[in-house]
Image 1 (cartoon, rainbow, N blue to C red):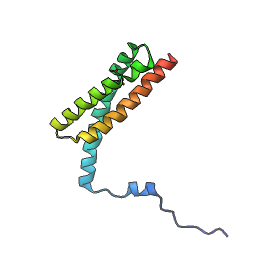
Image 2: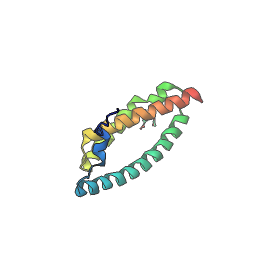
Image 3: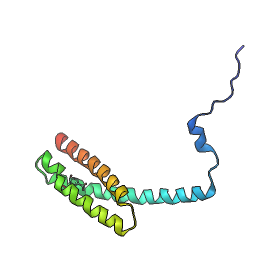
Image 4: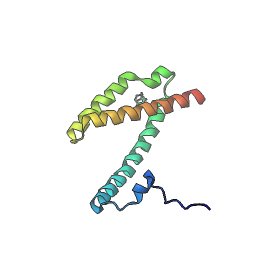
Length: 110
Ligand SMILES: C=C(O[C@@H]1C=C(C(=O)O)C=C[C@H]1O)C(=O)O
């Protein structure tokens, strides 16, 4: 005879538990901002790829001096906007690294 075992709890089930309504509202705001941020990243990507098409080689693609200029500017803008400069720098470094990979991929395969 097969024994019925109780349903197992797994980590994904915790996501279906009732979430505090205030937290739900705050998360809806974060979700809405994410939609806006991603639209802007998409627009930025188009211009990054346009810059990429004007470059001759991989060292021009990486442009480390330009990366540092962008980061310095982003830290100042973050400060002015009451955002954490460290969070903005980490975000920008991750984003720029990913864009460089996209540019390199495009250069190697096109
Ligand atoms: C878009 C460029 O290419 C790369 C991507 C950058 C960026 O995402 O801001 C900056 C410098 C380069 O590493 C560029 O040279 O301007």
